[in-house]
Image (cartoon, rainbow, N blue to C red; front, side):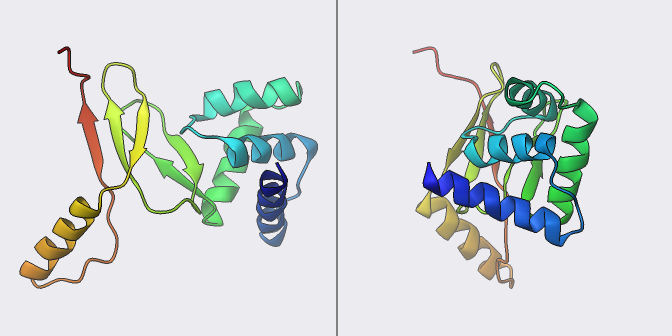
Length: 142
């Protein structure tokens, strides 16, 4: 829990450094982002934030996400779903598998995939700087 508290304080500091006031409502949103183990969209963040502070509005969620994104703290993912999903940008590198039937987003890391991507870039005369891999899958029925 102490690690989450430190992370929340860090996110609050980044907002303040960017000239954004940390209100009670924004603090609730930061707490949810710091503790999230999934990739919530703005509506889900709003639902969770209202459990902490009933005065949180959806527009506050969007403004806070925009400020955090501008500061490089939050990554916006535009998976093939209609709504953007969010996660904090300080997570170690990982890729995503998206279940096309449920919308579940599963994080994974594969050294084999990382190596293959670097090899392909090198074969084409490039150094791999960064990448984003999204696998869209359907659960096997066997």
